[in-house]
Image (tube, rainbow, N blue to C red; front, side, top):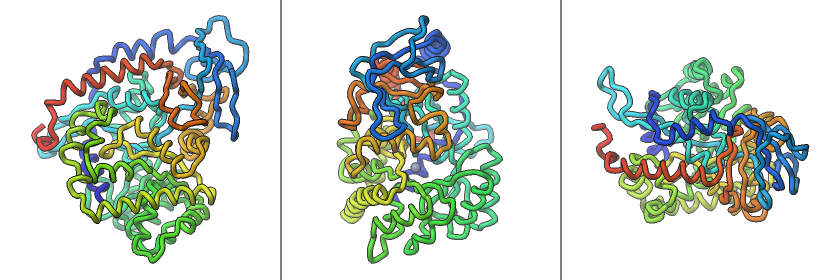
Length: 479
Ligand SMILES: [Zn+2]
């Protein structure tokens, strides 16, 4: 599928060696992180809290106190030393979690010289700014590499404001690059290596054969790692066989579509029941196919998309000049994408009806899907497909925290949890599009007001625009 080809080329970009890149706003960010704002007590007054703990719960007109990176109290006395923000009429939700991203790291396109390192450098702050500007305070990278450990360390060290990062290392079959396993014993060994390298999760991909896939899922479970990923193409026409114990989550609703495409019927209810019976969760990533369909028709909207200015100029150029969705589009491929969009919506409805947990993911980093911004699109698409506003919020807060095993720390607004929070101008339970009306974000207790966020975004936009002339996708091998 086209997505795979695209993803492979993005994978090249992700080849990693971490460099401390210069960042215009670095000193500003250091002040925010290490200065008084982080140390002191901060109280939000008169705020409507949507804690996401139990259905329909709203704590109206509440007071919440943040100390350091933790929620100290809700509706208790405000300590004298606290700085107070009046949040009258505003709404507080947990920081959002994107369960499917591909975060850019430094990369190169030429490997034939021994001492050659990356040639395309990315400022870690610039890569993380779009996430936090959108209140995305935790991400799950589904093709994690060494460079992502470096990024995560920079964030934890306090040099960069960014989301918490969960990392899944990918295993594929066939003849490609990366971690390839074409036998059960190779599959098991690759899982052991992934564990030894420090990744927390395993991602399975499309070209794995049946027995290798099963061995990977089994070995991962033995080593205490959850498995997420595609349904391998080897299960085409026999999708039920892919539901082996401990296949934890399926990334993309269209995986169900692809592996049943040749069947006489594609019954969303039956497919949802398979997931339910096996305890497999689903991250539908509606935005990626919706966006792919749009790009297949025309690149007009993409070229005018406001969030494009926050994408690294090399990728901007790739998306606009070397766009495989668009270049390879035929009447047939477009009609297949249309069927997929329709199927995906039906599947979401069926998953909901069967009680399969749905989590929000975007595949951000793929053509046309911008980090951070796209999660708001995804949540809105989930509502359009039949979730309630509350269910959609749940899919990007408490549920993914639970799947990742960090629900004791994030995903809800409760005393003792990390202060990953979004302050909204309007109630997202009335209109899910209100998640975009951000008045401020707490990232691990650091308060970023809307005006600070705008400053960071406009600096990033200017930097990207100023360096645009240096990057051309077609010349990437020369860099
Ligand atoms: Zn992906």
